[in-house]
Each structure stands twice: as C-alpha cells, then as structure tokens.
Length: 317
Image (tube, rainbow, N blue to C red; front, side):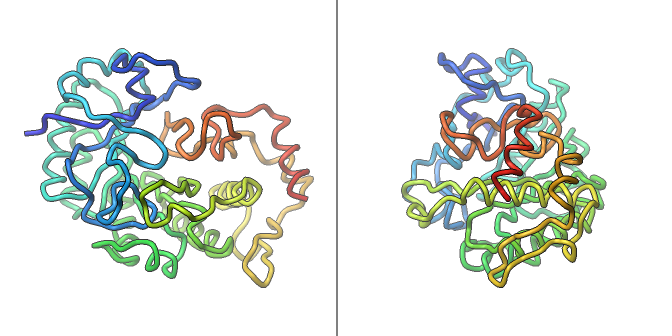
C-alpha cells in the first residue's frame, strides 16, 4: 500500500505544504513516486540513478520532499492546478504503485500525465482507463550513440521507440511526449533527426536542457549554451508544424545547425513567442526545472513578450 509520495518544491508551496514564496506558480502538480532507494537504471545525468551519490530528494535541480499521501490528496485542490504529472522511479512494484496512486487521484477530476519506463500495452490501456491522457517517454538522449554512452538502462534505444509507438497507438497522436535532454553530447543534426522521427510516428517532443547535479556521473559536464538551445527550440517548432523537414535544415561539417530552411524574415512572421516556453502536456509550465530563477530560462514558464522573438533571431544571425 502506498503511503508516501514526493512533491516538487514549487508544487508543495502552491498546495500549502511548505511555507515559502515561489516566483512563478506551477500550473501542473508535479509529483514523483516514493522509493527509499535508487532507480534500477543508471542514467549518468540523473540524481536517482543506481550509481548516483546525489541527494535522493533531487530530480534535475528541483527538490522533491516526501509527504504522507493522504495529506497530499487533501491539499491538492488548494493548488488549483490544471493537471497532475506523475514522475516515476524504476523499482520493483512501481507499476502497481502507480495504478494505486491513480485511484487516489481519480476523484479529483484532473487530467493526468505519467512519465514512465516502458510497460506493455495492457498496462497502457489500464493507465488510460484510470484517467491518464498523456505519457512521458524518457528517451532523453538524442541519438543511439549518446543513449548507449549515458543511459545504462534496462531498456534499449529500440525498446524506447517501440514503447513510443505503443503509446501513440493506445492514447492517440500527440499523446506520447518524447523527452529529449539537449547537452548530453549529441550534435544538432542528431537532435533534429530524432525530433523528426518522433513527429513522423505521431509523437510530440518535450525539450529539456542538461543540468549538472552534484553526485552524478555527469556532475562536471557543461550545460548547453542558450543560443544553441534556442536553435533547437526553433527547429522543434518547425518540425511540429510541418514547416521544415530534416532536408530543409542546414548543418556544418560538425553537425551544428546553421539554417532552418526558411529565412529570418519568415521566421519573424511565423514564430510565436511560445516557441521558447515550456512545451509539454496541456497546462505544463515546469518553472525553473533546468536553471536558477535569476537566470534566463531555457524554457520560459510563461510566454515571453512578442519582441523576444525578434531579439533572439537577431542574436542568432
């Protein structure tokens, strides 16, 4: 029986479980399964990894304190959230505990997203029957080459793509959110190739920026530059909307993205400011998941002003 659950620090503030101020209120209630040990997988960038020395309250740079489940269920309505997003750590019995948690969430009437390691189609059908409408797919690495170097996982590169296809089949087009972390060692070309593959399958893509966490194998690895991340965000949008394909983008000999297949003047007309905001499930803003609040965010938790698009495009010239 599930007794505890982890809640992101900002979510806990919004619910009144922690007395503190948040610069931006999370519009989704971000929660994570509670497990007193490490994940069965050993992703080099993750605080929850089997070989990590990091604080187990961490996921990315966010702290996720544990609370009594009943206390969290009682406090959830106070947060006035648009959705619940449940992150999972891979451990024995995790699927059964997720199903139990969904039974607790169901009476709240909120749409639910679950980020989970590959499960069979029957389990996906069960998740759907319990109110889940989006599934996060933790592919993380933007190429098989990088996947094999940073993801010491029970699941192979091909397993992750098979799972993505199953999610699309069960939940529908756009309901599989393939998570990609930019800055793990991939080239821009590899990132664009992987995003195009996801969209061609009927999945969507949610971008994250690599965040070094003390105690992980990649604690000394550098973060991606903001300019590079902005280029990838633009490419993702153009692929999503069918405005460019892989053949349209221009890359240099090292695979660095040099052109988008459309002119800068055209980009000024077609790019909405939301391109640079968090792109995920409906109602997701994920405040400061990859950066400190005083820094310019990789993914804005609110839509920036219209003039931001032109300023970014000028900086990218």
